[in-house]
Image (cartoon, rainbow over all chains, first blue to last red; front, side):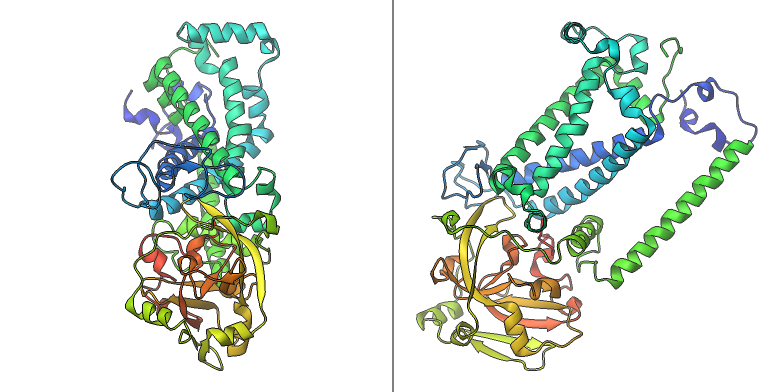
Length: 258
Length: 252
């Protein structure tokens, strides 16, 4: 288990060592792994910067407009970084919006570009069809019930499961990739006065700028929920081995499950 | 080293070289077409450049959304601002009769404009949204003279690329490129919702740039400078915003 093992065999000088790891197929392709980590880091940056921006106005509205003089849809019981916002707290947090906004958009670009490459490659290579669409025998309420029960019983996944995704994983990954991410990007762009000047329907379809902002918040919270459960499940399945597999593509141990 | 791994190495090397050459070419093209914002240096340069370049390529001629009269906010928020200076209060006491807008830089006829003069030019109005980077917004009817008209009166020179605009408050100044400066919705606004522009909303004279967030619509405008080089102003980052950590381009 040395550091050497993560060095691709072909880059090691001298005669190629015959190690079993070269014979083993990769669990995750290099492209999937790169996209995963770029999106994961970007997501964390977007989350932190998004929370910072939110603190400057922790109030939500519906429709086109909203400000401290108008009624709220709801507000978060947190202090604010603007004295303008009545929070009930006797202090104002420092303004962090400058770097937060820079970081938010820069990581959004990284996530979107990596995501685009991933999605195009996923269709071309058949990754979505082979690995993420539920398999024929799984498409039934009974199968869904079975996998939910096994999750609720906290049954540890078998070794074979390290080589594939179970039904709940497939469904939640599909929802994240094809519903939550597109939605969070759309609602984010719908808050840009430049983008909406070119594509006004992007905001009118959502019911207005403030509706877009509110939906953006809820979709972001759904992504956070997914992130927490995802990390929790990785922990449960074996944090070190799953992390190693997502970084190197390799799975330790016998190949019987393949 | 096997043949296969050598081929892989050559392929990877070629791909990397192509990528680097491609990036270099893209950077040169972007510079030639004016797609690089003044605050592109530093760690946020990638995101900032992608934002600004996308706006230049995708939305250069688009119009900010305009709203029906029924959507004008009954409560157009005057947000917090620093205390007004004595100079401002003096002008206010005189009903702003002595308020002047100076225009200098790359123009054939530099000069001073009173509010009366500005009001004698073609009057335009738009019902647009003011959206703050913090998240709140309101819709108002803004009345004023298109900035393009004042620039035409002053006679901008062909090499001009940016218009820098200054508030009476020395902490506030900003700039826009010629695309935004000549855009039909970019106003020097002196009226709001049928009356004079209230001081809380930037009266007597405010820049209105509706395709960008509120902080580009600087209040209390007293000076325009037309230039081909933003490095001559402040710390050279295009506006006061990047000097306090905010992006120069505020279309997102």
